[in-house]
Image 1: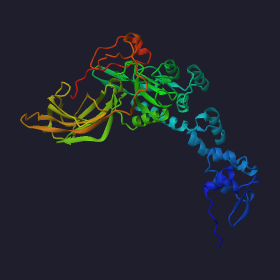
Image 2 (image 1 turned 60 degrees about the vertical axis):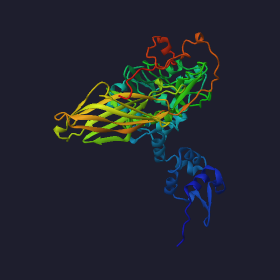
Image 3 (image 1 turned 30 degrees about the vertical axis):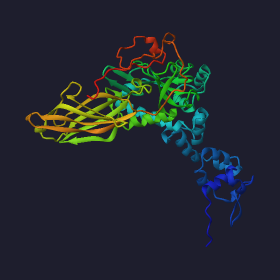
Image 4 (image 1 turned 45 degrees about the vertical axis):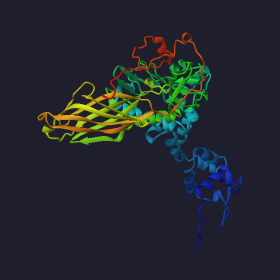
Length: 486
């Protein structure tokens, strides 16, 4: 029996497309030379094996094959071949194909969005999953989303700002042009004491209105905005001032520099696609809690739960860049604690919290111990099936640290029975940051009225009243006082 030699898919692909080693295997007449088989004309091969091979090729290779000869041209137009590329690149399913052929469907999408073929499926899938999640959990956010923007409008924005927009960012804008400036914001909220933040995803026209040409934020475009704090995340449109093109970051004024243009950066993404899809994945996987119809950006370590005598304590944390500083080192974190008694606990297990004890350790190993009555001025009572949650905060002079401790409870029907409930160790770490490379020069205080002043006191709780400062997308929100370690 004659044994047929297996020809790898890559070899066939190279032969038909005229690239790499495959070039020596093919000729303009479309004949292949196979070991032990002499010359084999394509016309001699049945259609089914050829179609099977073509089905493994990318759309560009199928188009290249159609130029080899008449036979391959006919087979390359076999409509089912285009079903896979339609699904892969445009997420088109059978029910969305309408009455067009698969090839016509692919080409129609390609003529409209071909520039974004390497971004579209990933971003469209992210948008679709986010909207599905919002419709079930935060329905009022759906109405704030804007329809996609036409291609010519994006070209006009590029001409207006004098910079090219990254293709993945443009692709997302084609799908949804951000949202209206409303609360709650699509990109998450945070509330602590008298401080509140909710970030909107900006439409491209509003973003272009905040495009920066000034030193410190040169060629940076705000893509989010909080109407309460003036906080934005910026997209770098060029390699400039120590930033890499396409990076996304929060600005952080260097309060030790005389030059107000010296802005450090907390990096939140390496590209728009990575930044947006990572956020969506966290949202739809329920990593972020939904509180009062808003997405709160608390992060929970799965093993950060401790159970003592049918009382469980779990902790989630969040870093607040708008209240933090790299120079001087002042890293602000908030944490949300959930205390819950098991539903099947006996009624006599009901208890009340009396005191708290904290052991706080920073990245240098410095330990601080805190003990006090209640939590945030409250003495919660827990009965079977009941839950109590509260939020507090802490600051570190190092970029990371951790906390642990215990609560002291007493039984409601037997006050002499006192016991401790473990608070699991939870870690806090600030995002990757990059310090400013703007030269520090002597700058007179009077010459800057829209930046952090040299003698700005990070413990000063006075609010800024100048609304114009907030409007121009470059004013950080002042720190707030909060009851630490409560």
